[in-house]
Length: 232
Length: 289
Ligand SMILES: Nc1ncnc2c1ncn2[C@@H]1O[C@H](COP(=O)(O)OP(=O)(O)O)[C@@H](O)[C@H]1O
Ligand SMILES: [Mg+2]
Figure 1 (cartoon, chains in turn cyan, red):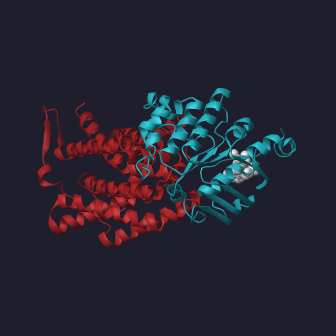
Figure 2 (cartoon, rainbow over the protein chains, first blue to last red):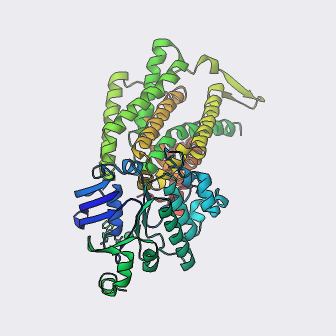
């Protein structure tokens, strides 16, 4: 479904991604792990075209994404839940959700009613400026906003960041339920237990390259890899 | 007293004309961080195009229909061909480019329409004075400008606050990248806002002409006022453009009436106070960068 091959990306002159290879299969949840500053967010930005790769290829289904603009990439079916949520704080919750809403084409996609069933709190807070939601509510709104574009692949960048343990657990359940509905997910996480609980496969990034790949069960059993790459 | 009331009406007239100019200017500023120093040129250009249409046909209303189409189309062309390339290149390039465009436009207009002051008659249907209980009289045309300005403000507010397209524009002011990452072609939205802004600027040039006349320099006079409006009201905010425009319009008219020797003093005093107390402007959400 998503296949990165030899992706190099820069901020100005700093060479951040130094040949990233990564695969997310159809209906698969892949966790991208790694310490702070290793290039996980940059990988996400490279996929969606916000930091266009200078070399390498990003294939989504049969389409090459490198060279396309962010809005075209999103329209091919990629939903972004960015680090820090990036809701539009002064717009109402409802405006945030409906702004980029796109129908799925097959008539069985995400619509506002279904989102409200899944996140009743967002219906109750419809008319509130998104900036006034709690951190957990904002995260749910950011996920809902991405789902309403009816993507086939969802990119989640540290959805548990700054949230209380009980909310982190909820976010984990939401990610699992996305997989159950057949979505593919690339999940960037610092919260290892959550990532191990929901992911099929894990990849660890260090200094702009992938240094470890394995199933979640393999990583859970591999104390050495965890200590070496994640410090836990 | 008999002087004050008509001056207040004139302040409202100037304020609403300024609003029509500043609305597009401010939204573009908010969306793209672009200071379009050629914005005033669209106003004078609109006035001159209207003058030519009126001379050819004698029909003010036809001119009012043609002018926004022409200035909006020219605005769109300039955005797509020139301005768009500067969005990622910083303010210095934008300032130099748009100032260059404004100077070129000023020369072209002087060459085509001359350097004399050209007056434009108000349309016959709006000629005459309206008497307020014998206390003072106001030209009907000025009341019509006030009415039209308020209607436009209401219409723009509805589009911006009550439609999905409006939500996209407001979201773009806050985080343009995120809007694009959600699958919205924000470049098209920006071009549309730019075209609308230049259409409104052109139209306000025609509407202003019977009040101010048309002359070389009117472009920069209004540009300066529009800049002050955006600084006072807050960039990227329609509400800010509205209240900022009324405040600046009032201050300019009253300042010139009562302290003619300090003509621009009143508006710059207001600007200085706002910058000190609320650097992001009355309704702005972020400071100028
Ligand atoms: N906008 C930026 N400009 C320059 N350098 C950046 C920018 N964003 C991130 N970086 C640098 O790129 C590297 C990778 O950052 P990032 O992808 O955000 O890491 P992670 O998401 O894994 O924490 C870091 O060294 C960071 O300092
Ligand atoms: Mg990150």
